[in-house]
Length: 342
Image: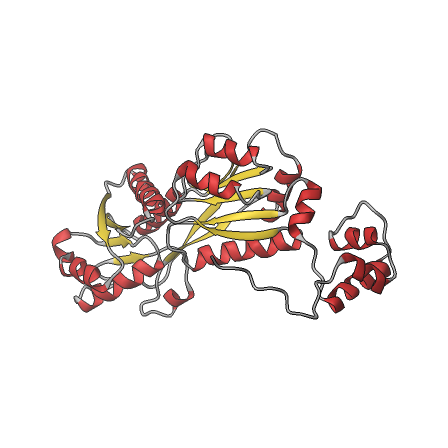
């Protein structure tokens, strides 16, 4: 059985009492300052002196002990989605983590691959998070939400295309992305539109609503436009196979799911001597910088999150006011950015 290494001889772990002695204050004052307690009036000079003493000694508060005193942690759990994370996804969660840290939350990402439904909720509950923000691609059920709340989670928040009963919902309607792309193509006179459906595991919660949104936009337009799903793997062989059959499909445009798939397919179409955009217009989603460097420059659907208050502040408010009616916020705004490829 493996053992933890012993503390090296002659060293000791600094305590709050050591900080108090060095700063010339009480241990209670150290606790108030380092736990960001604003209910007790402490001068700024004293706060600075305590923080400097803690830094000099290398002291950090014991998270488990603090949690026991408070009855809960300050941990916000961000389970890792099963779907591959692109740059827009990374930017979103990176910004959310930074904002939550500024509000004195500890943000923990949890690898959830292989965990399904209530099994995932039980695993998350073991860490006693004060809030869970569950992304699309990880199933949450009302039972799992109950497990989390009974374990001390004050806010369970789903982030995805559909709300779940019993949880706050930050709804990101992927269908709007597909609809926005098709409306742009229709405005350019295209009527025979392919929609790439990625075959990679984990992308279905994003791809299926985007396809449905594209179909809905074509039907609502009354233009007689048709939409054809195009299964595609994210590899050159799959793209080359599709491009080789392109002229037999009779399509004059394609919404390629996102910018990465659009770049893959556009290169294959050009290699197959299918002119872009003369024969086929191409649009992606995500508005990546790399797409703007291509020739022709890639048209894309740009997305942004729109909330009445910053998302981290919204999560903090939900934590501070548990037990209310679950909130639903529709976050996603999409806009087509037309460039040379359409």
